[in-house]
Each structure stands twice: as structure tokens, then as C-alpha cells.
Length: 116
Image 1 (cartoon, rainbow, N blue to C red):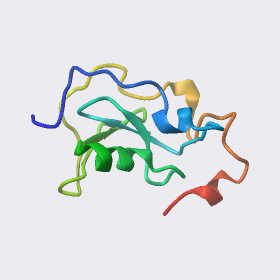
Image 2 (cartoon, helix red, strand yellow):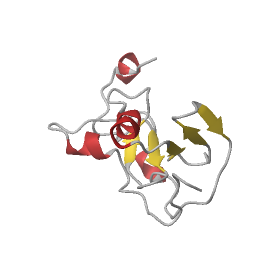
Image 3 (cartoon, one colour):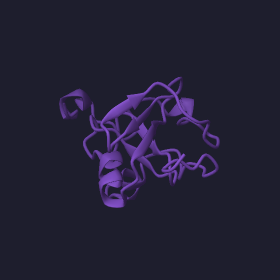
Image 4 (cartoon, rainbow, N blue to C red):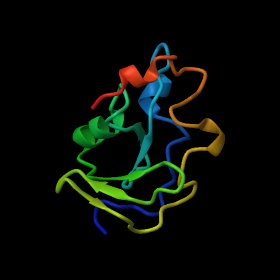
């Protein structure tokens, strides 16, 4: 399927941009680009890096990178699909990482920082 590369692994276990920030950021939930494997944070997260990645690259499909979630989001059509093709492992963030995460960077008032 055009725009999805099942063979490409995820870029890591956390949001690329949040990890690279100085100081490093935190996220609520993670999303995985189905074309290049880029891991970005969801739109409720302060950085909204998954959507920014799609806008910057034109990569239209993201998949949840949360345990137990297999849905895809199509940015072009603004549609969610309950499932799609299997992607290269790992298919979710490390279970010990938790959400929001990483736990050592999440502020005590984290819920006040979520975007609606």
C-alpha cells in the first residue's frame, strides 16, 4: 500500500523531537509513521510532533505506538482505521515506559499541559 512500508522499524522507543530537545521533553502517547518509522508524540502532547512530522514530510499514515492499539490515522483523509498491515517490530513503546512518559520528565501537573 502506498504510504505504508511494513519493513521499516520504528526510529526508537520515544518521540524523536522530545528526546532531542534541550531539556528533553515528555509525551502523553506515541505515534509511529507507517512510511519511515519516525516516532512522534500525539496531538494531546505538548509538542504534537507526529502531526508536525506528517506535515513536514507528506507521510500520511501514522499508527499508534501504544500497547494494545493497532489503529492507523490517515492525515490526508482525516480518517481512522481500526487496523492495517502488520509493521516491523517493535509495535509499541516499552511497557515499562508508561504513559505519560518518560516518568522522570513528566511534571506533577502534567494533565494541565495536555492539548485538547
